[in-house]
Structures are given as C-alpha cells and as structure tokens.
Length: 220
Length: 226
Image 1 (tube, rainbow over the protein chains, first blue to last red):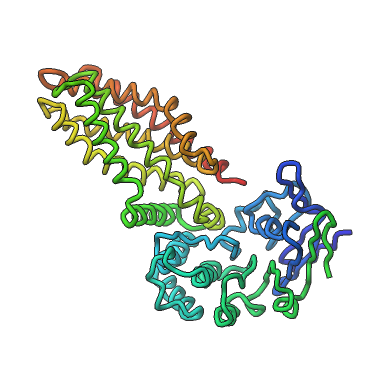
Image 2: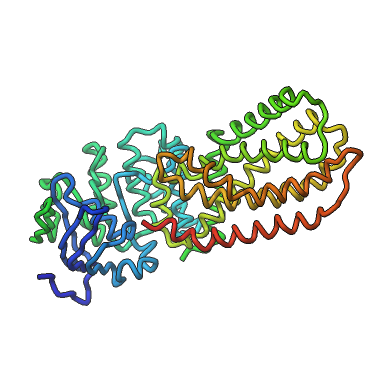
C-alpha cells in the first residue's frame, strides 16, 4: 500500500509505472521523501533506477501512477518544477566544444541567474571542485572525471531545491568524491541518489528504495 | 521563469560560438555550393545564364547546401545532452526553436555571402539584379530556416537523420522554391532586372515564412516532450 502523503513531502510517488513500448521499466513504485532527507535507490542494471530519476526530473512522463515533486503533480505541473531541480545524469549535459566556464555561464543564463551573481557562483563552484585552472579548456579535452566535476557544478549552479543524482561518483577519483561531497553530499538538502555503491551512500541515507527486475520496489 | 530574450540570446550565442570554433557546417555548405556551380558551369557548357535558368541554378544550389547545415542543427543537443539541459531550465521551449531559426538564418546569410558573388562571377553578365535579390534571399532564408529547424528537430533522434531531413524537407519547401525562383527570375533577366510580379512573389515568401514560423512555434514544445 502506498504511504499517505504528508504536507511537507518533497516527493510523493504512488503506483508509478513507466513503460518503454510494451516493456515496463517501472511498475508499482511508491515512496515518500520529506524535505531535507536523502533517498538512496539501489537495484541491478535494468531495474529502472535511471528511469525513476528521469521521471522525477520531468524528463520522462509516467505511464500511470501519481507523482508529486516539490508540491507539483507530474506531468501536468512539470513546467512549475523547471529550474527547481538539479539533475546529474549519465550524460554530463555539457557542450564539448565550449569550455567548462562557458558551459556554466550558458547554464546560468538559461536558469536566469544574474550575470554578476553567476560569475561569482561559477568561480566559487569551480574552486570547490578544484577545476578553476582547467575551466577555460574545451570540455572535449578534459578527462571523464573532470567532466563529472563540471557536471556537478552545472547541477547545483542555480541552487536547486531538490537534487537528483545518478551515479554521482562515476569517474571521480577519491579527491574528486570528497570535493564533490560539499556540493551534493547529505548536507546539500533533499536528494535522491541512484548508486551501485551502497557502502558509500547507505550511511547517508534516510530511506532506501530497492528496485528489482519484475519484483517491484521495496522501501526501507 | 527566465526571460525569453535572455534564453534566446544565450542559445544563439552558444550555437554561433560552437560553429565559429569547430567550423562543422559553414565551410561544408560553402564548398558544396562552389563545387555545384563549377559542375553547372561545365555541365551546362554555358558561361552566362539569365532568367529562369539562372534562378533555378542559384536556388537549387543554395537549397542543397542548406540541407547540410540543417542536418547538423540539433546534433550537439542530441549527442551532448543539450535537449535535457534545456528541458530542465525554466524557459519557454519555443525559445529553442526561435534561436535555432536565427542561427540557421545566420548560417544561410554567411553561405550566400560566399555563394552569390561566385555565382555572379561564374554566370552573370550583369550584376544589377543582385541588390534587390537581397530581399528575396532574406525572406527565403527565413522560410527555409523555419521549415528546416522544424524538420531537423523531428529527425535528430533518428539514426536515418541524414536521409530523413532531405526526404521530408524538400517536398515542404517546394512552394518556397517556386516563390524564390519566381521572384529571382525577373531580377536576373537578360538585359537587366525587371520587377514583373516581384512584389507578389515577395508576399508569397512572406506568407510562407509566417505559416511555417507559426507552425514551428506551436508544435515545438510538443516535439521536445518525451
């Protein structure tokens, strides 16, 4: 049975199903996450973890079920959510022919961040992830780990209310993980983290959602 | 919500900066047009063209050169996650359509800055018609950019993108090409330009621009949906 929705819930999902053609990627998923909490999503490849994150990010429409994110019902009120979510996916969402700094400026302008404030915020973020010296190089010339650091900056640039993080540690070295923790760690606010590294993320989780292939979802 | 003007300027500036840096579309478009003029020159075995033949050679060349740029218009958005970044931002998605149309108009204008003078050198005895031709080029560019942006956004998710764009685009731009060649023909007439039905054809071009501009604006948000 789906949990009752609390007034302060950041996310409330009931009976979520998402199909790709005839194949269900998610079926019967339900959970509730309060503001400020962290949800860690675990499951084998193909269990629908990324699909769940993309539904919550408004990038995919649910096939059925009820999804409310930050008080907005999806997909009907998806437009109200845009700009309030920080999404870190498998793709870095960075243009390869622009520099890291140019990419972040582009992201800031799309999110309506004032130019002066954007410059200060970009410098602060680049310093935090240790990329200030490489930020003027084209993204195509950077390593995968450096792209991930820039992608984390892009994700939090507009100070989102909710972070949706898909394998946030991928390609990061130990130093990178520690630096990124300041921006997307448990102190960063409400988070949904998809991971294959439970040892690292479970201690930070307020809730755990285990997705299985053809087995539904279990919240603990 | 970010202002549409800010988002439009950001996307257009990003596209132009990327093109200036990589030169992925413009040199190919320009080289294609020059090569095609050379082929026409030797294929027709003529050193001078006028009227409908001149207009046909010019517009066929510009159209096929434009297809090269249209094919690549959304590749960065598709391959580098730009669609997701734009869908996550608090902007009116139709702004992306407007910015891409503007970028394509800039590409086409740059192409014509190279191609039209070379066309004149190769084929025209009298360049007096080139002045008023600018109005035809501008209106045709707007229509071609609006239609091309719409088709490119639909085809970009297909692996057969390079095949789909010309197959779908070319039938849709037949009215545009009829009006563009109709307006260009009297300008390149033997003995100097005339303006017979020039205004009528310009109005047809304007109407085409309006229709496809509005269609693109209306459906683009839907095209970006999952």
